[in-house]
Structure formats: structure tokens, C-alpha cells
Image (cartoon, rainbow, N blue to C red; front, side, top):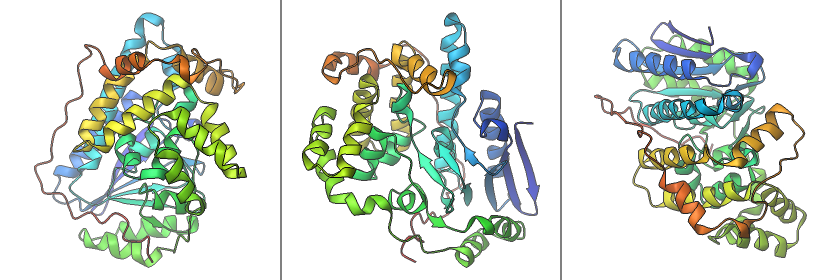
Length: 362
């Protein structure tokens, strides 16, 4: 089974069980995840939910986009079903009414961020590498990441446009995680959670094992990131990094400039919209519209080919320059099409108090 739902005492457990594929998500896994989460949410005897990934390489490397690449052209639209149900799951997690503990150990990317960073108790380790790398495959940060990253301000914009992965401290500073524990303490934490009697016991267990994350690498460059990402146009963001001239800024300019021009412009526009959005559901709806339109773009398939299929890391973007991507093209992508939109259902219960970030100052 690619996803295993189980009970340990009053703890509901969801295990992603595709270690050979870095626990990448498929549509059946998303559906089983949703069923398990709904069951745990309604069951009064369940006090909390724990999400983990099988193996020692990571929680989840995202959605299995290899499937999209291998679909027959006439069947590509079927991938919209995956996105719709995945985004509905992301929204369900964001409003889950009980403690939702996600162990973000190892690689946590794309859809892996969606099933973890929207939770209310997000745990990283010294092995964590967190990223939204979608612009590198001709796509954009989705799974509600435009909501998360737009609220991480300059760090969020940089992560979205550069596809850079970050370690635990930066993930916490960016608001993508809450608490750092040592990887060797994962099993002791699971053992403690298996004995909880109410939701408050979850926080006690986390505090006993929490470690101070220290300052992240990106905190050294916050002023530069703020100045560069203050520009609305991606061209101007890159130019600002180039002008500053430090090793970090030149690398940032190079990293961003190597990504899909179409994806970069769509990402920037989605982030700007997300900054004024009232809730994550609005961002997920905007992302779904754009995702469906991106199915018709060259860069999505070329990016998947270069990164995942052939692994030559040499995508040939079309257009290959930012100034060749018109504002009309971006508006067309954001406008979506006639594909049925996701539907978001609220929980009957009042959400358990969420305290994101309370460990960051320890």
C-alpha cells in the first residue's frame, strides 16, 4: 500500500509509503489521505494526527509528475483531477480542527510542502531540505504555496523564483515550519505521541524535544532580498541582484535567470495576487486555474523532461527570454479555462488552537 492509515492509542497516523519514489503523491494516495484525514477529524477518540514518510530520504518529494509526462496527449487533462483533489486536501489540512503533526524530515518539496506546511504543528530536523522547485520544471509553486510564500515576504519571493531549497532554520523563519528536533528524536517523539490523552499532550511532547534552530542562512541576506524582491517585474528582481554584486546575489540572479521565463512571470503574478487574498482557498483556486492553463504550455513538459525523464538538466524554454513573455500570456494563464474548480468544505468543529512559530524564539 502506498499510503497507510492507522491508530496508535488516541493518535491517528498517516504514512506515505513509496520510499522508492521518495514518497511522491499519486491520485489514489491523495484520495486515501483525504479519507483518513476526514475519518480522524470526525472521530472524537482521536486527539491528533501524525504524518510521516517511509524511508530515511524524506517526507515527500511532491506529486508524481512523471505520470503527467507519460500520459497520452488526449489524456493530459486528467491531471487536472489530481490537482483538484490535491488542492482540496491542502485546504482540508489548513483548517484541520485537531493537532496535525507533520514530520518534515529529509526532502520536502512541492506537494510534500502542501501536506505538511499547511498543518498546525510542523516539525523539521537537521536533515530537512524544504523547497518549492516548480519554476525549474516550467510550472509555479502550487498546493497553496503562493499563500504561504507571499506571507514569508522577501524570503518567500526568493524561494518561489529561485526554487532554492532551505534547511530547518530558514524553513522556520519563512513560516513553513514551527519546531526543530534532532532526527534521532523522531522515534521518541512518535512514542510519546502514541500515549497522548488530549491535544495539549502534543505540545508537551514537542517542547520536551525542541531544539533552538539558530539563524538561517537567508537571514544574513534579508535586506538584500527585501530590496531585490520589492520589484514587481522579474526582470527588475534579477537586475537588482546583479547590481548588488556579492557572491550570493550573483548566484541568486543566475538561479532565477535559468528558470522558465513563462513560469517565472506566472509565479510573480500569482504571488502578487496571493498577497491580497483573504484565505488559502482563494489562492488554491487561483493556482488551479493557472495549473489547468499550464497544461497547454511547452515549458511544463520540457521542464519535466530535463529534470526527471532524461535528467540532462538542460531545458530548452520557449520563449527563452522574459521580455518575450507578454502580459497577455500571463493574464491568459491566470484566467484559467472551463475546467470545474475545486470545492472546499469547512470542518464542523472549531479548529484546535494553532500556534505556528512559537518554538522559533526558544
